Amino acid sequence: MPMNRRNFIKLVGVATGVGLVGVPYISSAAEIMPNKGRRVVVVGGGSGGAIVAKYLRMADPSIEVVLIEREKNYIACPLSNLVLAGLRTLEENTITLGGLAAKHGIKLVYDDVTAVDPVAKQVMVSAGAISYDRLVLSPGVDYRFEEIEGYDMAKTPEIMPHAWKAGPQTLLLKNQLAQMKDGGTVVMTIPQAPYRCPPGPYERISMIALYLQRNKPKSKIIVWDANETIVAKAALFKKGWAKHYGYDDKDSTKGIIEYHGNSKLAKVDVAAMTVDNGVEMLKGDVINVIPPQRASAIAQQAGAVNPDKRWCPVNQITFESTLVKDIHVIGDACIAGALPKSTYAANSEAKVCALNIARAMNGKELIAPSHVNVCYSYLTDKEAVSVSGIYKEAEGKTIAIPNSGGLSPDLSELEAVYARSWMQNILAEMTT
Amino acid sequence: MRQKLCNLALFAGGVALSSALWAASATPEVLSYTCNGCHGTGGNSAGLSNPSIAGVPAKYFENAMKEFKSGTRPSTIMGRLAKGYSDEEVKLMADYFAAQKIVRTKQAVDAKKVAQGKKLHQKNCEMCHQKDGRQSGAGGVLAGQWKEYLQVTFNEYRSGKRNMPKMMAQRMEGLSDAEVEALTHFYASQQ
Ligand SMILES: Cc1cc2nc3c(=O)[nH]c(=O)nc-3n(C[C@H](O)[C@H](O)[C@H](O)COP(=O)(O)OP(=O)(O)OC[C@H]3O[C@@H](n4cnc5c(N)ncnc54)[C@H](O)[C@@H]3O)c2cc1C
Image (cartoon, rainbow over all chains, first blue to last red; front, top):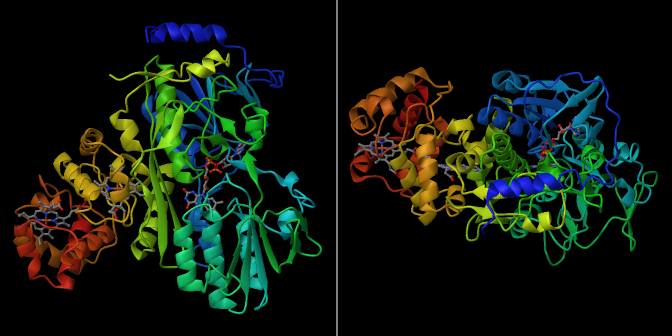
């Protein structure tokens, strides 16, 4: 390859300015934080955002980092399924970002980012505009409610909670389970992948089954999965369900867990408390509808989402959007090849993104990414399993390194201990 | 240094892109940062059972990864992860973590057990795990390590799942469960 890097960048420089077709132009509002040096603005202080802000400051403290988050308390999703079985409280999942910001000199702004102007290079918050040299979006997911007939964005989740963002929704589902009569039916619907946390729904099934077994033994949980079969750790979940909850793969009506693959939710009726997949209707006493998902609204607004209005395509080395210049997208919102939508993956992506933004801003060569993902799932209060992988970039794609990572060999009590320790460390990474 | 060209296709397609076109090979930081999610920033674990790996001698670290990879040393997760790295990459991470400053977190310990553990340590272990477990060429860092991790580790040693050096095995042999627990309290108490 005779072309050297410097020439290449020059060439690209000529091409910049295009590719912004379709992005709405927003007239500039008053700048509330004049940008005197080099600034990166991060939107979303969750699994990805808090980490990218921290590691950017670690990589180059001369870069100013502004972190904007709408919630004063961040309630982490991992292990929130345990709350449903009474094994954990949401308080244990709750963190604030003040300490992180103070320690690393991050400028923390609690506000809602309502718009991004990629031409003026500004984000809009309630008080005005904040300009950036580079923007990182780690806004998580929103839901594709419109694909479910009868689903009202505001009202339906109050009756049929999704509990797919940990917080009041988790507690609502927990309370509904507590109030259900013994002998009642819990219905859960799982959307087609990709969605946030591939093994999450199956961990939740396990936790609800545990709760029912202990408190309402005449009850059961019926699952409609839009996917052909269990999306992650299938054999381990089935093994655990058989061992603990009387699950029979040949006749799943037998145990506490009745599981149906290839059953995609089409319609809900909150008054009748029914779900409908186009073939049959099912009545539930408690109904947990996990809706299909997409990148959170602000990514759409920024013009960083694919034409199918779902996820954000990004360069796999820098996590810069391939649609909008100087905007990087990490975490659940982005398409990161073989990496799943998980907290560990968001944490890993954030570090690669931070390192390469700092390199790019200093005119240095980019670094080839290295990622890890590990997701633990609990089957009971004492046993957990994990899936893991090590990832690199190859020919523009993020791939899992062959013959490494993979699944736990069996259910493990020790992994249940290490899973809590993992959570402790992942939250400590976001707060210190 | 290895270089490669990425996203040529995208560029040719006329999509605006930044300088994201060349990447050098992985650096110690990019490799090691991925471990922090479980082992803590800079390898100082926030607890409770994930071990701290900051300041661990590189030789011990490399050997641990080698044994995880081959399965000689039992593990819940590290065996699967270690398989994803070449010896060169492990060396980069070993040197990186060896250079990180150890931050010892205060742990809940029982003063009586600490005192008992101290005596046992001086008699049986100090010769190889010097300075109350702070220093050891081949034996890692015990001082300030998480109690729960040490307990798991002793269980593995005593059940024969993890190999110990012969001399260490001789010293461990006569110890009771209570004495082993006392040792974990002693190491955990070190600041
Ligand atoms: C039930 C459940 C269990 C899970 N278990 C695990 C697990 O065990 N392990 C694991 O690795 N992952 C797990 N996950 C997945 C994990 O929670 C997500 O993958 C992860 O949080 C993604 O990080 P993120 O940074 O993309 O988004 P988030 O962590 O959701 O952060 C996004 C942040 O952006 C903020 N935000 C969004 N838009 C704006 C705006 N316009 N202005 C200001 N702020 C904004 C939000 O308030 C939020 O704080 C689980 C998820 C669920 C639902």
